[in-house]
Image 1 (cartoon, helix red, strand yellow):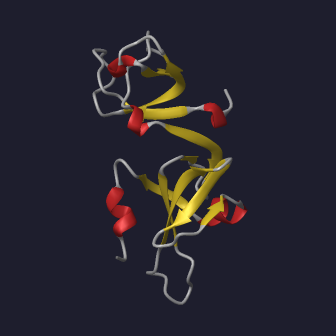
Image 2 (image 1 turned 180 degrees about the horizontal axis):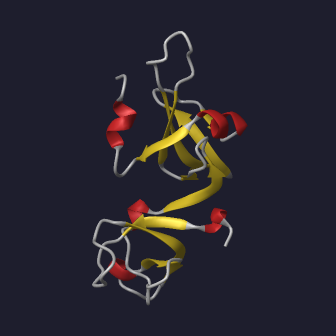
Length: 143
């Protein structure tokens, strides 16, 4: 499967042996319009051992950009990326959030209103260091 079409989200309920509530699950997004809100959204994992798609928290749904950071790690919507861009001050870090804007994946640098498409510079200089759900404090750095 092409990584660009993967989704991930946090599990809200599951009685299986290999996962816990609050864990991330990666796979294909499944929407059942006739289900109750609690079970309307699920992700069918691409891993072996899952017999059904566990219900997920829809507010945590993230689509994969299909791109990889400088370390080869997949970049997802709502990821937070960091780079050390100033050779004179190597302790200075630049943080960016990955988001969907208009018709594509973009980044928004911390403390800026500018939104820019993800480009080769981002892929070659930034690395994923967390996401908005597990590490929101990363976007508060430098405030």
